[in-house]
Image (cartoon, rainbow, N blue to C red; front, top):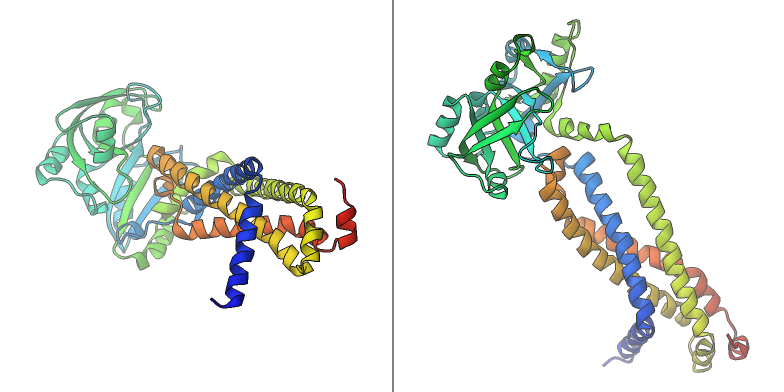
Length: 391
């Protein structure tokens, strides 16, 4: 073996032994770093899901949503649908409305939308459903279509009945489950006939749309179509705002306040905490080994080697903490994704490979930065000072 390779191996072995000599302290430090970077990883995944991630499917990039410009809680006349359908580039359109309601108990949360069944499958061509179930859903005014994952979660099947107790709307609706669909994304949703909702409401509350969902002829057409729709109603009593489906989903986050600022503030606090934890741990380790440093220098270790050993120790501990933090963050992201009910793109929340690399790199950088000062101080300690040290 090359002498240099042998020396490097011995140096790395020494770093590992120093990092694990006080196992209780090392484990506690790794656990603290893991907890901090777990939270940092989850925040990163949330940020990407809310503000960066987009539906990259061919149909998803062509879907647009039109809503009342003032607020999502304000409805639009149903007459807008025919006018929007005439806009060049619009291939299909339907009115759809968030119903809300309660299924058995409030904790059973999932998306419930009233829609126009015949147009639903044009706008969502990626929905995979049996033809007989599709026809039954379209034909039955009280029919409902559920994502297969949602049906499995509540042990529902085709032919069952499901009742939603109204909260936004003053009606309780009973539905016949006519079909189950599979999709690549967001199966935790229930669709039903908007005409059924209208007919269940007082006459003065019928024939409205909270939103219009449409499919454009191509993704390239979408920005121009959105602009034309909003221009069409610029001087109308009820003005509109048209945006991509992904942007519309992300707009729900604005109800929670300045989420970006919150995420930044929490991340900054985590970073500061990590620096303190790592710095304190390495400083304690260095104080315990001052005399050892003196002995190492008498054996020929240079200032740079002493400093490298201490920085290496910090790197090992922070890297382990970052790795276990990523593992926990990945599991938490899966749990949040499964329980999101399709809210604001969170069903796509995950800790992607590049996020693992980012978080673990940040762990190494933070650990190294925190260790620089105690490592520099140890490396500059003279042999005489080290041998006199009695702490």
